[in-house]
Length: 241
Ligand code: ADP
Ligand code: MG
Image (cartoon, rainbow, N blue to C red; front, top):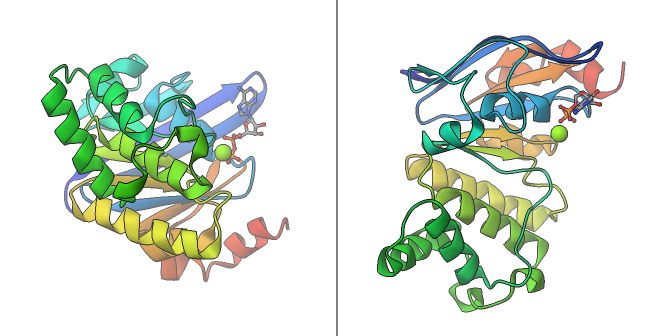
């Protein structure tokens, strides 16, 4: 790993008596695809929430992004600084076309010139490998995979340094997961660091350079995919042992 773009140090998040994230520390290198695995309820989405301040920061611990503390910053300031996330449930504008959705996102991000917004929309559609013949479809008419592509394109339009994706493969078929694999590698090659939560382990292991495995809020294992899969504790956590 070269220089770190994200440093999480002893991050904790409690909900009443439940410690959903416990003393989690890791660093993400600039340009990496960094994976986050773990069984259901292990704290993966909570970790994304506290890193982005949406809708809460950590109960304790430090988070640095691009050299600056962000753990006490408001969510909009974190997003503006280039740490951008998607959610497990797609938030779509059903009555807008793909093109319109991206123009709205561009304007929301402060690109007020129409020609600039149009160019940006074009470039993120290409990056998300979106079929050019489908850009005038309503969002509600898209396939599950196309909705994911639009979600990623919408996130990319703010030109994030880091893109955080929460289970983008959910609901996809095997061939679609293969397309998503290529899409993520392409986005990463274009210079975007990616943090990927994924339940589909084959995808996570294929694209991640390094990963952490969470279990009951704590890091159970971390390192290279080839080493992590061999860890007996990981198998046990996944099999509910
Ligand atoms: P994952 O994304 O790994 O499936 P989550 O981060 O969503 O897991 O949840 C981790 C734990 O925290 C779970 O036990 C979940 O029930 C609990 N949890 C998540 N959000 C809240 C909340 N807002 N209030 C109370 N408990 C929560
Ligand atoms: Mg989750």
